[in-house]
Length: 491
Image (cartoon, rainbow, N blue to C red):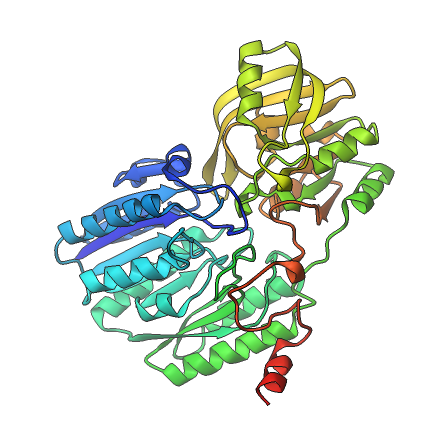
């Protein structure tokens, strides 16, 4: 038996003015058939799992491209076609393969294609029509009809923050192996929940819903259950939340289960989503707190959702209030990093920070800072894998506001991003992180309180106001009940 595997992953914020080009993949992760020789990260965990499982069975493994870029705007056509072409070329050269497993993101958009994953799967199917084709997706995917039509199996991460990539890779491999042996005949069905939002799976009703999905998978005939959360900041036709059910040769069971599950999720819409504080309210609560650190999430400037990572809205507010004993980061500003490197550790300099990318970034802020530390080739944990940080600079203002600045766009995942440079977050009154949810569990261990802020920026969580032009169906929270609205419109 022969397994072919590859990874192509980026999450596209179509409202971002920053194109995703080959440089974005080169600086983050780009390996040509050698990713499993490197330590795993979130999007290569699957390759490590699949290689190990296949080799245990004595299968031949053909490993192709592993390309990952930090989210930004649409991928350039030249870049997308080049990366896609490498995977397809390797697949042709591999000859007859029995199983094709791909770790894709599910929300990749190029300048010329709104559904890159569906496009890739369609071409893979045309090259190897008889192979078992399975794809693992980040749950912030657009689960499209084109994807469903051109593969045998789709499995999405269940957890957000994502700490189950390896578990889902194991699941997909098991299903593919059983399909290859003829033990199962998978059929898939999805259901549009008519929701555009974010869902943190670690607490409350959302945690219960994930458990319910696992319980459904124990029922006779049901092979796999996924909730594709969707990626909100993308103007594509199939943006939004969808359920996905795979059954063993029972299309009616798949359709009914997906619909029932999706309708029940819609009914929980107020319980599985969160409301977020304004910047003003969050700072008032943080400064009034009797103990710290209070961790504030700058949700509007999450580079993991395609925001620039250099916005200054929160920092301006901190400086205007003359707050001290604050840590904040990570600011993406390669120019500032270069200036600090030239100045050296210990230097006191005047520095213009942030606000460089566009209107989503706010205005630059002029500071007098001391360069406390500079480190390169550091990483921060996201699950078992390490995500790169590039070159990181620790700056301190006269008011003892500590700032982390780097030259590689990335969100904050873990306190170690700060602490590796010598910054002790436990001593801080307020810690501001540029992130949405991935930081939550690691920071919960050190925080007196966590407050998520609906700040301005490229990933502002004001979902009812997103300027979609391509989604045809109404959705919540723009419409209170889009199912009723659809019936009324049809009538």
